[in-house]
Image (tube, rainbow, N blue to C red):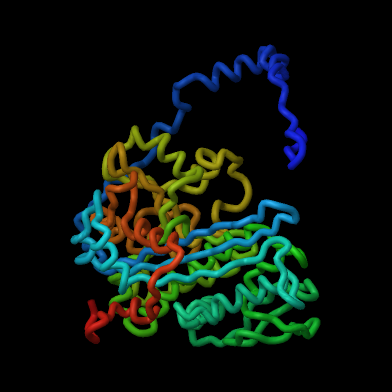
Length: 440
């Protein structure tokens, strides 16, 4: 590791000749030859691609969900650091989508769509050497997470209500306490809250608990610093809660229209690490809704990562307009390149299964669609509403980006802006026009 540049002296440079001893090795030479070989690695030749019938009914109401994060660090010691997070939800319908030029969308046409159909949330996290009076970074971030979900004027407190709806499983009649979690004060696993409570006291140490403590952000923070991952994980969780705020609204007010909606999220349908404790309640709700006859259509798109790399590898040999649903053994051995022993892939973290979609030689997508309860080896029929989801994709494709989906593209545009006109969250979920009480 070289010495770094300072304000007075230059940094240490690596030797230009230090690599010569390395490349003289016969093994290294063979590896370099292999690295430069343009032949593709071998892939399974019996992949069971299935043809897609795009003639099923399209879903007419579309929601796009996306988020962005930006960290800012001072240029001089002590290198103070904060992270800004923004998430956005956009509501479209097929009529609005049909009026958009997919290749060259007109800015004014986009403005008209976004003005009354988009909401956003923004907050900031102190990460290093940024302090508040009488509050350390640890407790400041706990409070920021709680109040960002509860007090955001743009969202009217709906995000915290959605978190309660999920973790207390309020779609059921059973009133149960919050599952036990690690207390942010005594660090013992035994903290909980009574049904539907947002605040309370730890039964072990008596210190104040916040509902958002059960997510576990405090487990990766120190008293005076927090990793950037806290902000990134908050963004992912907030995107999920924003998505389910729409689902919750329709579930409580208009279940028939719920099955006509498609919620499109940027990224996988998964929540990792300690935050994954909300995954099983989400799975149980999706299975419950399906069993009640109200399919919830969720779609996540992965634009990078191992699954994306894999479809780039195998997609050229696949038939157009087809899907491949990888089983657990295939995922672990061919995509993750690890042994197939151990827990199934995504057992604790994923609320959506993987689907590789090949439309043509240029358009390949990694999609996530729920199956309800966890299923390591799903078939086509196990995915909730898959026929309608796939039939909707051709009408929401964006020609501006390779394998792009218009709801994600537009939601990203909102999430990336510094300011954006706010809207009432329930109005957007209901699809009510500004000038009337009718549904759009």
